[in-house]
Length: 530
Image (tube, helix red, strand yellow):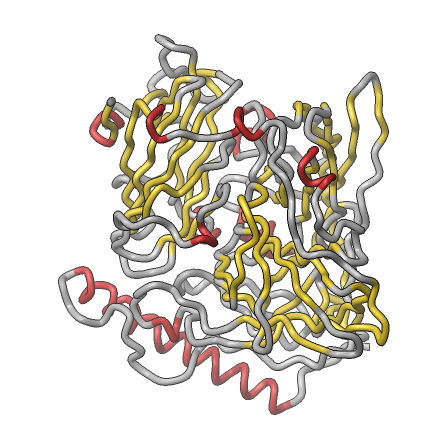
């Protein structure tokens, strides 16, 4: 039986839609004025929000994505994933058409150890090409799953690589050229958890699905027919949904049976930035995108732009209930924040403590035996590159699959200076590496941004200096990507390509592109050699 939203809900949605449509011209004019030196950036021109989130009743048990089965064949741990269409009941009795890996929505959690060789047998049962990008993973470019590794309908792909990076909460999602936003929005995403000697010995909750909980936070627009709606009205920074779900569940709760619970937070949305925390307690941040911090950091909340992750430890008392909350997001001086999600606040997940809780120690851990080899040193940097994000371009250029924008030498350490020069939300993701933020407008990063990162939110008119090293893999022809992870921006061309080469080697030609393709001759204007 098809359920239609109640008249009040339909009217509220219609009001929000009219408000969004009416504000687009205001946003465009405000951006133009701000770029011309006006004083609108950061101002709340009207109260409230045009992207508000509906309140939910937290009556549905949180779904825990299953751990993906695997088998070890000739020393390689082999997983399989199938991208497929399905039907999901986000609301009882309402069937929503969705996509997922090995199911109707989202995908299983892959898990592997540092030092293991892994392979993933990917099959595409969709009616259009897709890909699977291993977000945050260090691996050869031909295994990266970017737009050059699309899998045709009915096709298969078997990337394989050795895990050689610290323990961390990574994830996987599609990356087809020009269609990433839609594929992720429909439901194609999942976590990829890495373990190592430090994480195995740490005093951290580590029983998956019990006290170590994956939390994939997403927002959606669900129309009156119960179907996902991806708004195509060029609104910034993309579709901001009025429904928030966790692991595909609206109004989810999780039973807690231990004194401390570990939440692996992933912003799996396509455009919305969350400011996650608790109204009634602090939490311990223990890891960022690429792994553990040097020590726990006590925080009220943590900002996560699309693609960013954080691991937090929450202390509970017997019998109590609390809710993970998204506070009004600090978007850092964007123009008209009320139109970009900056004024929105809402609950995300309810935690319900049992009457008796098993004891759990304070979070603590020792350094990995690989810590020295993983460390990045600013003194080792030999190249500094600059990147300016403006509207839908990086350094004045839109994405071209046949053009190599940057060339790095294998084993080299570089500093990338990244700046958004337009007052709207942008972020920056670099494939293959985990970088460290050296400074933000000349100041040291706050503790929550001092750990290993692969994605960072860019506050407008602010320079982020990122330190990274290009280890192990060189291929002059097959590029990695760097791009804004607001996925509408990425699809609209806010992306570039870089290759890693042997010393003295020149960039080649990306796959599927003939003569005339190759290196961006303007690249030298954006780099300095030390």
